[in-house]
Image 1 (cartoon, protein in one colour):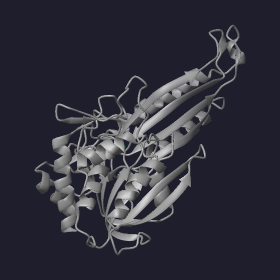
Image 2: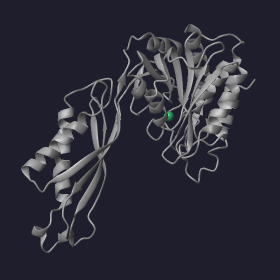
Image 3: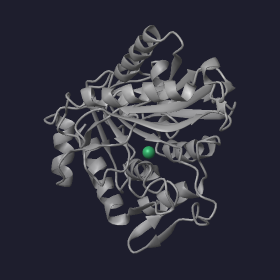
Image 4: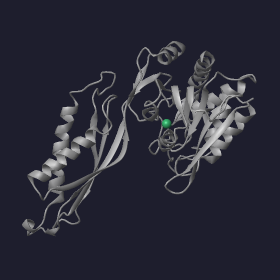
Length: 375
Ligand SMILES: [Zn+2]
């Protein structure tokens, strides 16, 4: 029987960045689950590049993976971000100074390895009623697999533990993640005759100034569990114009916002849409459109929720919040208690520094096993 470090090493060796199919990784997990007598339900879909992606629902011996209403779901995404070409050992796990290094080591193959270790070590018996292990695809490019599972109503869990590196803290709240692209249209003209054109860049500047002021308004609504405590807004990229002597005919920028829990995901979107309408009323030459690309709300589970309290007492670590987006945003719409949890530190993830402390990996096995035993 393989231990958690061996399982994690094998998972790291299977390439699974979001650009390729996650089939090989799902097949590896499925083989381990089948040996333990678990029943499996695959929910495949094709991504935008027509590549097969697989979500997997696994149920303990004697239970049907087709049942939607379940008690406790452990969710792990199967994909990683792509790794830099100079990280030659990305898929060649190495133990150094008590840490296991490799692509996906903490984000989030570690949690999957923990759960596979726990399941394979359980004596052949039926697990707690309503326990499920769920693997998802395409988390790193916008929680697409989890959104797909949610859309087909395959799963309505009461409680969820979502695997992400939290240094073994129960993350009970997270900001949402939203992204839109704004296109401001003007009219090109020779810059010696600017009155014959409409500068898309001047108009974009007008709109961006209004968005900057908008953030001051959002600062009034706070949730002190976060730092910063309010919804944040960022204009991350901007492009526009074609030449120094041409009045720019078009300007585009990306607008990102991270809403605190309780703030609607489309709050900033709706307000910016109103600002665009107002600017157009004030100046009919002002024309802009905003296209939403992602809209995930924040999530928050009560501090005294039993799942939060259980992880706090099992790990000795206080609950925390996470500054990054996760699948919790999607399933908090149906689940009563959602916690993000896992070994390792997200600050090493998405880089060639990615690793997981083996001590935390083993502590996570003990904690997750206790949660399952208490279910
Ligand atoms: Zn992750």
